[in-house]
Length: 191
Ligand SMILES: Cc1cc2nc3c(=O)[nH]c(=O)nc-3n(C[C@H](O)[C@H](O)[C@H](O)COP(=O)(O)O)c2cc1C
Image (cartoon, rainbow, N blue to C red; front, side, top):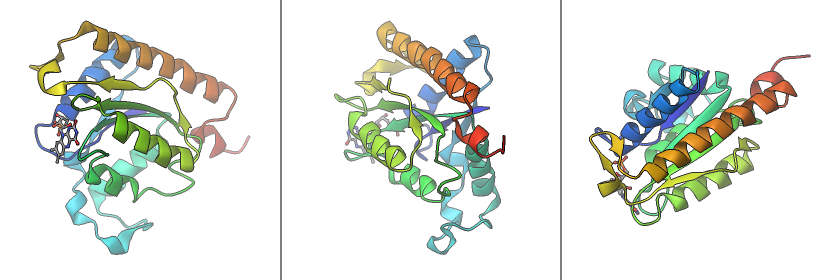
């Protein structure tokens, strides 16, 4: 299964609304995709002494187990102070290398003001590129999100079309990697 990571723990975030839109697009592609909402992960229950630990608090453990099993991840990331939210980086820092990252297909969606989350997405490319994930090259930037999202819907059909094109392309990208056994889940299994 693919998972959408809603990249902030801010209650009522636009990031979660965008994640739901993306989930709907995947339903039209015939794939059930689940959202990992950082509001539900209880990041406050983990401590710095638990980096790399298997014995994480249950909600954190369950979220990371989902990521570890994902045949694709769609990371939806808002811009906070010119980068990704600390909550998202904190979550990622509890992942295991190479298991969680290496060869895992990842698609990136940014949202924010004028630049549509360009900076956090590029920072995430640095993180996932360093950790040898397969980053899908087509990224989506949702600009002017304050006015661009109303009642859970994107107002500009061109942005919706970009999300649809990304999802369709990413579905093929992940499938192609799997068919050659190059993706994380195939690499984890012998044969
Ligand atoms: C702590 C914080 C910092 C932010 N910094 C930026 C920023 O540097 N650039 C920007 O375009 N938007 C910034 N924003 C606005 C968010 O991109 C905007 O709130 C958007 O709705 C996505 O975040 P959300 O998922 O929390 O709603 C910031 C928002 C917060 C809460």
